[in-house]
Image 1 (spheres, helix red, strand yellow):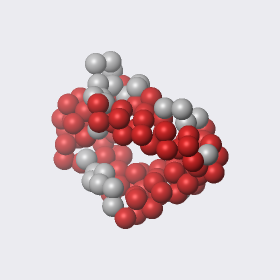
Image 2 (cartoon, helix red, strand yellow):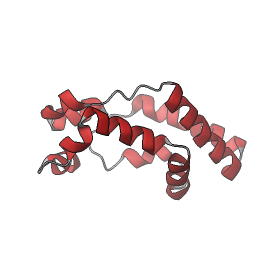
Image 3 (cartoon, one colour):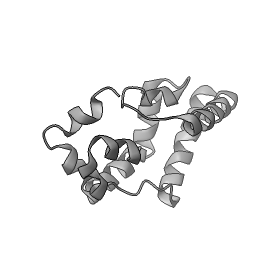
Image 4 (cartoon, rainbow, N blue to C red):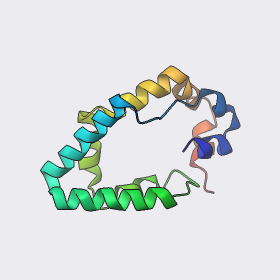
Length: 118
């Protein structure tokens, strides 16, 4: 994702946050998967994880429109609720604010450059 952002808007290189999956994010991801398991069952959650691992390894981000496809068979509403309730979105937002990415993305033309087709 970082490479995509910087390829479209080189000025973002200096404000990209560290998206490392650390203990805090690992706990949020675990909560999200537990939510999926409770909602759609263990087998469907395991199939989702396997699908994401395959797709993420081959994913080349050329625009922002296809990123949601990584959800596979997970309903977008369920994914958003789980990521919100489990803190993933808060962690990502906090990291973007701390690094300055969030502010940089508010500048005219930045979002348009990121959304433009490949």
